[in-house]
Image 1 (spheres, rainbow, N blue to C red):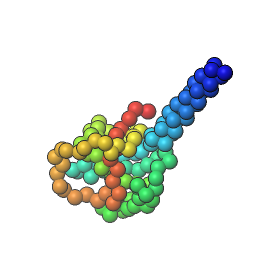
Image 2 (image 1 turned 90 degrees about the horizontal axis):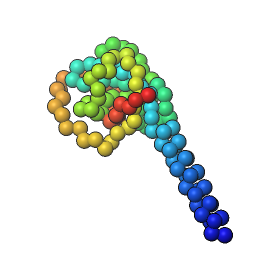
Image 3 (image 1 turned 30 degrees about the vertical axis):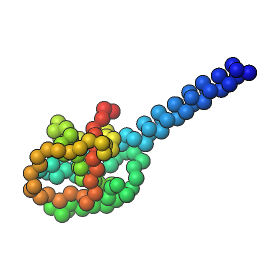
Image 4 (image 1 turned 90 degrees about the vertical axis):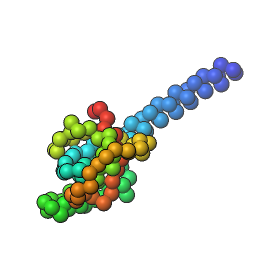
Length: 125
């Protein structure tokens, strides 16, 4: 009887751990494209892949300077930690990161960005 309980507990822990890992990976990693890399970290990004809460991004947004329209757009909300190696047009993977405090100097020049910003962390593929 004790071995049955022990084996049942191990089975439940294994199944739970497996599901937790898959859920976090599936819902926590997204793919985006750096659409506009404007001055003073006024960056526009577009979600390419991932099941994100649609209230966090703008379904349709038009850059008033260029007239170009974007679907699933958002502005960069984490300028201090965004890698400067990414260029306009680059695609990359990210996770939403609200744990990092953003304390860096960013100039105040204006370039239009979507009204919704996301703090993100770029991660490997």
